[in-house]
Image (cartoon, rainbow, N blue to C red; front, top):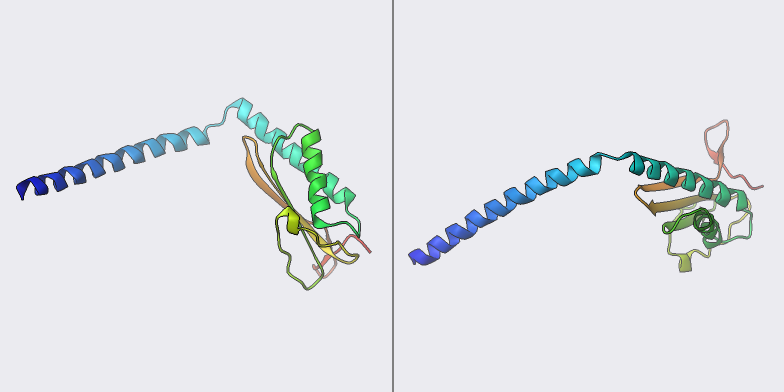
Length: 150
């Protein structure tokens, strides 16, 4: 019986030591994440520029009759032709008064209609984790979102 008690006590001691080491290592990892080198900062800026270009390309390409997936493909194509290697690109369009829903590409077949609105989501994981969501409308005097397309 005392062997079992000693074993339990030793396991508790090891658990405590493991927890202490994990907390110590986590603190070190957090410090490393926070400190960015000049190279990492430059990569973050380059990623942001790439995203801006992809958003401009996607919104410039929008016209009624296109599908959500086709708009997402424009953003992806821009990134791939301008040095991007990976990313998640989704698009959700909706009719006024309806909810928008992001979906995988094979489900993004909603056809953009005149009078609709659109959001493009882009996630790039290239030294910079970020997401961009933009709506395609412009604000009216009442503050509501009006679509770009007649």
